[in-house]
Image (cartoon, rainbow, N blue to C red):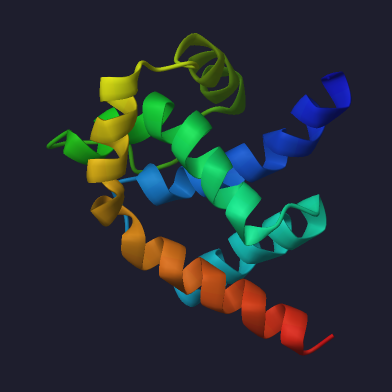
Length: 120
């Protein structure tokens, strides 16, 4: 279990950028894509991590008028993810309904990963 946590940690940190009050440029998307590729997770598994771990922890920042934009401290992020796990059915629906807030980033990430994988 510990190794799975260590495997997810860089993915959590990278995907947490989707929830910042900033615009992610191509360089940021390439970095996030590289982290996901290095993790060995598939796109489907990565989306599951996004929805099950990060949405419950960080969705609030996308609705905040003056949300965090510099980045989430690693220790705070890991604690927040732990505290917000296992949302109930209605919260999961709420998170899915709010996927549109990161959909463009998700699509760009998928394209970045697919392009990188097709060059190797």
